[in-house]
Image 1 (cartoon, rainbow, N blue to C red):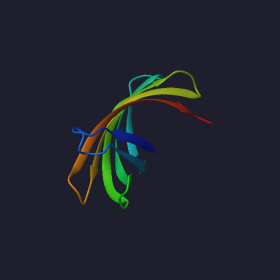
Image 2 (cartoon, rainbow, N blue to C red):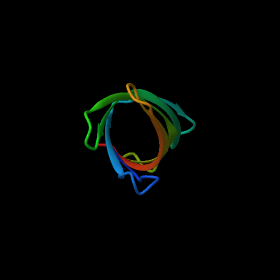
Image 3 (cartoon, one colour):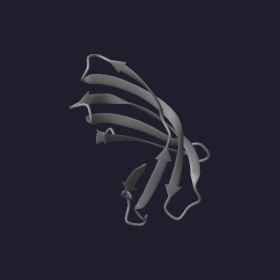
Image 4 (cartoon, rainbow, N blue to C red):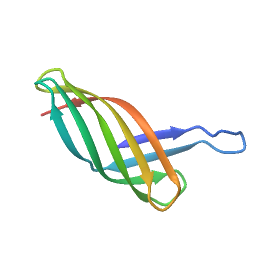
Length: 100
């Protein structure tokens, strides 16, 4: 799940938000027990403010830092694209993953 808020370049345009729901398949390359590189891709559903839902895709890469057996810190970048309109963006994030 994701939430992105885009500020308009000019006062004549409104700011817009986009929520995303994605399913990503990842490949992990482990460097040791605590650090791994990941590459992923998958489909994505875009829920755009005041618009119909749109389908697209994402590509992602980043690093996972395993803090202990339950908690991982993730630093990644994701490329998002919507299929039927000219829209692409890249996001960077820092996540905390909890495993059960």
